[in-house]
Length: 305
Image 1 (cartoon, rainbow, N blue to C red):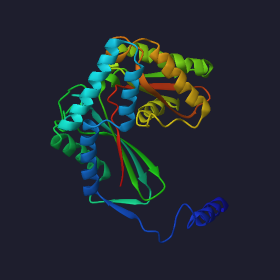
Image 2 (image 1 turned 90 degrees about the vertical axis):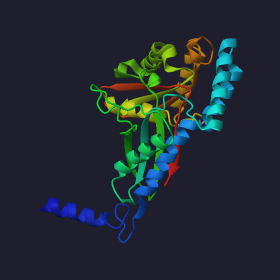
Image 3 (image 1 turned 45 degrees about the vertical axis):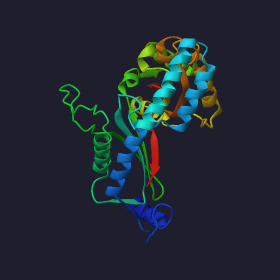
């Protein structure tokens, strides 16, 4: 009884503070608004590359030592221009839609299910944008769903009354080159470096370089994979605040570009545009590392509703 009384008292103390604000109104977001925005974002992500990626391509072209590599980078720039002007996909693989949703806990979704609204937005975007439908409804039976749904949706419940949606269509040429390494703590930072370099070496030309390398370190088996995927959506000009992570990104990028894989896998000095690393606390007995590679068409669009 005493314990129960303490819990009730504690709950009363929290009520009206940062946990509950009596009388606070929820902000309503309509499913129709979500559907419309997701539809537009799917088309935008597939037609236009983000400014940081375009800048990286321009920089790589200036740095490339190989004449063939420079020519390939020039063709990739031309491809981007044609896609933007003619409103056609940058790449024929318009990807499986991956969504990262930061949902403010003071947001009320009205008019239906949030998940269904997100999938409907993807459905309309891929149909109306004439984007290739690449999703099969069962991994073994492999019958195409014909509308690129369902999407892969990651939810993060946060403070506030806004909803932030990031859409990152992921092609599978590079996705298939991704790896998870369950390292031992004794492997340390050198083991992490070798794991990333192994993944990139094994990928070779199959990941359609130049690439962006997303790395997740820590958490659990599935958490590090999520971190690696999420890392690909970070602006490559935005550097980590943790000094060792920043140094690791720089060192790995230098070593990857010394592998000689080059643009299109045909040799050269510009194999990767960037290495983005995300970390999370982990268990005393483990050091999970995931590597999620994306080709130069590293597509991602973010909107706040």
